[in-house]
Length: 421
Length: 95
Ligand SMILES: Cc1cc2nc3c(=O)[nH]c(=O)nc-3n(C[C@H](O)[C@H](O)[C@H](O)COP(=O)(O)OP(=O)(O)OC[C@H]3O[C@@H](n4cnc5c(N)ncnc54)[C@H](O)[C@@H]3O)c2cc1C
Ligand SMILES: [Zn+2]
Image (cartoon, rainbow over all chains, first blue to last red; front, top):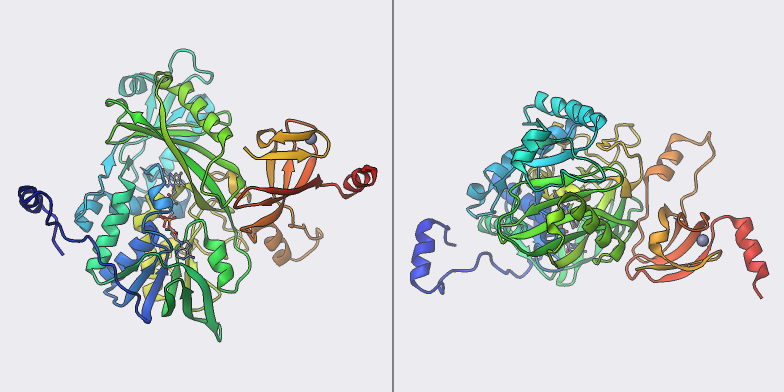
C-alpha cells in the first residue's frame, strides 16, 4: 500500500488522481482469529491498530455491522480537550491529547487535528472560583489551563454577546491545547494503518449471537457466518447492553441515549476556537469546520432511546443557546442535523475492563466524550487485551467501581445516566 | 415529537414532561444488602424495544406516569398513573 507523502500527492495529481490504490482491503472473514474486536468505530479501530503496533500481535479482526465509522465516529462534533479534574480522567485524557498531537504522523493520514482554544464561558464569581479550582488542579498534572478576564475574552472572541445577554459573560476558563479534528479521517486513518499491519476489517458483518462453552466465548455468530475467537473485545458504543446480553449477561451500569449535532451552511472564517456555554440549564458548544460550517450541539434528548434521530425540542433549545451567545448567527441557516446513540454511564465515566467472562473485554460507557478519548481508549484497551490486566492508569474504569464506592463522577450529578454530559 | 396521553390532562407534547427512568426498578428495603442496593441504583437492563418507564408531567398536572414505549420507534403503547391506587380509580371510572 502507498505511503502518503507530498511526492505521492504530486505524482497522482499528474495522472488525474486515477492511480490511488485502495486505502484498506475488503477481506473475507477467516474461520478463526486470535483477537476479534466488535465495532469499527474509533475505539474498535484504534484498539486493533495499537494491538498490532504496540504489542506486535497478528491475526486480529474488527467486525462492523454497517460501514466503518458510520456510528458515533462519524456523528460527533469533534471536540478534543483534556480539561478534566478527577485523577483518572486527568491522566487518561492528557495521554489522549498527547496522542492526538502526533496522530497524523503516526497514522500517515491527515486527521486535520487543529489545536485551538477551548473556551468555557463564565458568568458569575462563583463559576470563576469553581473554574479556578478545577484549572489549578489540572495544572498540577501538567495540563495547560488558563483563566481569561473579560477584556482578554473580548479581544480573542469579539462577536460574543457582551451587551444584553441574559447571563452576562464575565470571563472564561480556557485550554489552549484543545482542538477539533476531522472525525471521518480519524476512522479512516486508524482503519488504513491497522489494515497495513495485517488487521482484517470486516464490514457488513453484524454480530447476532455469542456462543459460549464452559464460561468462555468460543465463537461469534455473524451475518457473514460463524467466526471463532480466542479473545473478544466489545467496542460498540450505544449498543453495549445488547452485546452484553447476547453474551449471556444481564445488566450494565449504562443506558443508551441519543445526542444530536448540527451544522450550518458554510460561512467565512468566524470562530477559530471552541466556545462552550453552560449556565442556567443551557448547554451548548460550537466550533467552525474547515469547510466553514458552524458545528454545534447541546444536551442529549433527555429520554432513553435507540433511535438514531433527534427530536425537535432539543433543536429549539440548542438554537436558542446559539443565538443567546452568538447573536450574529441569527440569520444563518441550519444545513443538517442528526443524532447518534451513546452509552450513558451511571457516573459519566467509561469502562475499559475485564468482564465476568474470562476471554471477553469491555470498552464502553463513553457518554458525550468518546471522540477525544479514542486514541487513549484504543491504547489502553489494546494493552488490557494483550496483557490480560488493566494498566494502572485505567484500573478504576472497571465495572466494580460502583460497589467499591469509587465513582468517577466529574459533574457530581449522581447515578442518573442522562445527567452526565 | 413524542405525544403522551396523560390520563389527567389528555394528549400533550413530550416537552411538557420530564423523563424519569426505567419503571421496573424497585428499591429494596432500607436494610437490604449492599449488593441489592447496588443493583437497584446502578444496574440497568437498558431495553431495546418495549420498556416501562416513568415520566413526570412537570409542566402539567405534575403527576408521575408509567409509560410503555418502544425505545427504537418511540411508539407509545400505554400510559397510566404511576401510583397504583390512583391508576385503579381511573380504570374503575372508565365506562
Ligand atoms: C452527536 C454527538 C456529538 C458528539 N460530540 C463529541 C465531541 O464533541 N467530543 C467528544 O469527545 N465526543 C463526542 N461524542 C462522543 C463520541 O462520538 C463517541 O463517544 C465515540 O465516537 C464512541 O466510540 P466509537 O467511535 O467507537 O463509536 P461508534 O462509531 O458508534 O462505533 C461502534 C460501532 O459498533 C458497531 N456495532 C454495533 N453493534 C454491532 C454488532 N452487533 N455487530 C457489529 N458491529 C456492531 C456500530 O455499527 C458502530 O459502527 C459525540 C457523540 C454524538 C452522538
Ligand atoms: Zn398531566
